[in-house]
Length: 457
Image (cartoon, rainbow, N blue to C red; front, side):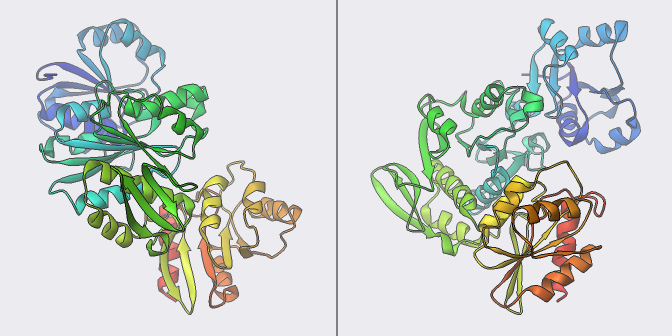
């Protein structure tokens, strides 16, 4: 689509909206950036957008009503939705009724970008799998990019891509709602469990959004799916593309699976050992599944197994997600500050393979902690609690028969208690099951503080 001199509305500011505006301006479009939040500062927004002719950028804030709305809608040729904006808003429905094409930021980038896309979605594990596949592609392709929900908008790099580029993209359900022609050469759905139902309203709509990742794929493309997930296994029976399953529970005739701790790739009648899970730096069955998904996608794209094997062994994991920090005095320290809710923190506990001293607690999001405490399962030898939730968690722990608890008033005090209680052969794990607000700006700052304290030992 040619956008030069056309009026294009970008709905929603934020990094995706700003990157979409920049791309459109570089392509000569007349851009209207619209955001319903009238408290935003237009000059601050404008300063963040590096595009073509900044005179071609109009910023509209607040509620659109009456003549102002009609005048704006009547002049538009295209609407580009930022992923954070719900697609069922009344104003969006009016745009549809007027017959306006409504794209997502991903569709815009895909239309103007070049090269092959390898796209990953799923409820959990997307970021680790995307980061790992990105590292594999960096070691294989001359031109590679990692984009999407991982924090780097696809539109920000689309015009830098070449015919031989490989774009590894983490896709959220919000981004997949608004694709039109987006067609990855290899796609993956890692797993599907209930999430974002406040946006999608029903589980069926959420599943449909995830499955959109493969809707434009053909028999020349490949979709990598989790055999152990009921939804994705069933989906594999209905896709047009080739299907490659991965499994952590059983041996597959064709696919990628675990056999006695060995990751094995079975493709085209050949079985090739990739590596043993003990050679990985990322812990836990969920991460072994992420590694298999990334390896399967790379193999389906034609990456040699030796490149895949080397990258898997070198990959250190994603920062703040069960991240190995250091071993000090025989104690191994792991930073799982991204464990900001009980479900995520359970994965941290399950990944531990030695007695563990655990730091928990933080901001209260009205979570229940019963399942998290139950997941301790003899692994957690001591729980050090801090933050607004510490009393609530302690009460839950005692109700479930876990008594070895210490309280701390500061993060530094909590860390010191862990060091004091950990013996050679133990692990200290920061996986709080709570958000960091109140003590820290975000989980990254909390994780960085933990790493600083470890490295100063």
